[in-house]
Each structure stands twice: as structure tokens, then as C-alpha cells.
Image 1: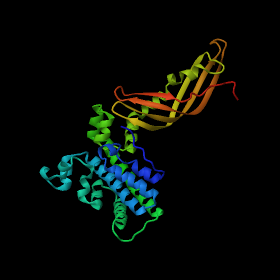
Image 2: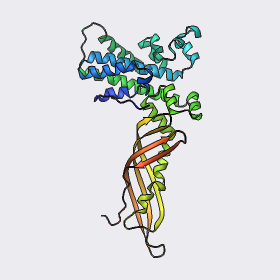
Image 3: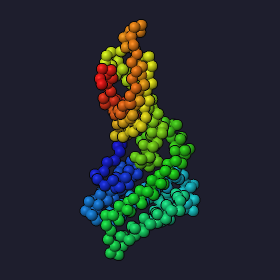
Image 4: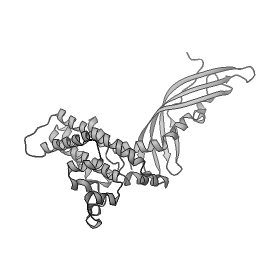
Length: 316
């Protein structure tokens, strides 16, 4: 299972697509048509048709948020539809994100308990779609289309923040993680997007890579090869900050990608013998990059730094 990639240069479209579940094209293959159509219509300046495609994607994401908020709880879903189990749409659709299409585009947003201004903005988004979905002669400019995307993204980002905050504290997610469920299953079961995955993954494991970068053993080769050579280290403090991870692939066994970080080093070297040598103080911050991998079975990080900084006391 890999993070999806899209052939599009428009930043707003890419941001919208980044909120789609990672498994979109695998579990919901019909969504690929909307993704392809959105990119094609934008390239051809067919902004009315682009809005229709984008709206399909926007609503799919909203449906996913509603299910995430419901955590696939049949009792809550039955309550939403005021039905018994025999007639509950969930049974017929097998937990399909399109379940809440039965509530209508405007009405379904209320299940997210969003602020009034966001609900009103959602209604405005639906009205924009309605203007171009009928033979009304409405023509949109690129500015109109980008403004529409901005509103969609703003609403999605807002909802993502409130839903993900609750979702991370949910009993069902905690139980899955405590049982060491594979990340692939977490992603598939809870319709996790790349945006949400990064947040969940870094909250659970972010300290691990920071510890690796702050561990003296990570820098052993650099510390052993100073110019001139040192006798030993009297004091060493290493701090890693501003760590950013870029994910390349994920599956049931591992997660890997690249990282960048700022690493501050405060080190006192003993130059020469312990009796007649002198101390050299080294205090520098380095921007480092490299690759990381995470073994979900052992829950251990490994990192490989692209290029170790060199410590040369002769250099200016």
C-alpha cells in the first residue's frame, strides 16, 4: 500500500486530494474517475465540469469524516436514520462512505457538529455546484474555481482538526493500536488519509526518531573522525528539532521515507592524552537529511543520514 500520487501542478487540487483516504483507489475504484476528470477538466479550463468533479471528491471526504466520527457504530448510524437494523442503509451499503448521501449534500454536514459559519460555507459550496450542474448558462473563471476549492479545503481542514482530535482519543482506535494492529488495517478500517496518517504516526512514534538523532551512537563515525584526531569526549549533548518526515510507502510490516531535521551539538573533545592534552569545544547546529524505516513488528526506527557533518578544528 503506497501513498497515492497525482499528476497535477495545481496546489489546491493536490491539497484537496491529500485528504482522500489512502485506500481510495483500492477500496473505492470509482473515485479514480472523479480524480482523473478533475485534473483533466482543470487542464482544459473547463471549470464548470471541474467543479462537479471536485464536488464529488469533497463530498466523499465529508462522508468519510462522518463515518470516522461515528466510528462505524451501528447504533449511532441507526439513530441518524431513525431506523431499525433491518432497514438501516448501513446494512445495505456495507459501511460505504456514500451511506450519508441518503441525507442530501446540505443536510449531512450537520452530523459533524460544525460551527454555524462552516455549515453556511458548506451550503455555499453546494450552491456553487448546483449553479453549474443545471443548464443555466453559468460560466466560471479560473478565479471562481480556485475560490471554490479554497472554501472546500478550508472546511475540510477545519473538520479534520475537530474529528481527528476526537478520533485519536477514541476507544476503538486505542484498542486497535494497543492490540498492535497493522498500520495497513488501521488505515483501511478508519479511512485514514495521508494528512491524518502523518498526524497519527508522528504522535505515536515521533519521539523515536528524535531519540535516534539525539543519541551519541548515531554520530559515532563523525565523532571518531575529527581533524585533528581526538583522545575522547568529556561532554556531549545533542538535540534534534524541527523534524519533518516524508513518507514513501507503507504496508503491514513497515513504513519508510525520508526525513530532515535540525541537530544542535554541544561537545567537549579531549585533544591529546588525558594528562597533557587540551579541550576543544564544539557548538554547532546542522541541517541533516536522510532516510528512515519503521518495523511495525519490533516497533523500532532505523535511520540513515545522507551525509555526516565533518568536524575540522583546523578549518576557519
